[in-house]
Image (cartoon, rainbow, N blue to C red; front, side):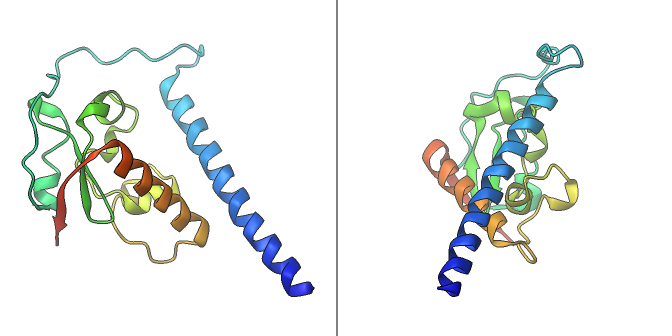
Length: 156
């Protein structure tokens, strides 16, 4: 009976951790997208051309991936667990003036798992992450697989 209780508690703690993590992500997004008066932040002036370019389907090195941030009319690419997604359709989120522009052109597995904006977390290193973080990463992968086209893989 005790082991059943321990299992039940651990499963529900993981679920609660995931829910809290998602809540923190929403709160961080809200703070980043509003100014001190509570009104939406105005987008930067439209000096960035909207991309209509289609990325070439192939494998990319991290250096090549870094060139695809939506600037200069280029598409926006992002990698999760070594899989590269075309996220150009979400330029309002990931483009140069978007709230998550820091993810464009990067491998973001660790940052997404930790719900982090830190430059140190923009990589594919999953060492030391707890089960809740790994579950969040699986949710991100599932979401990206449904919403964005895969264009290739990261070459190491």
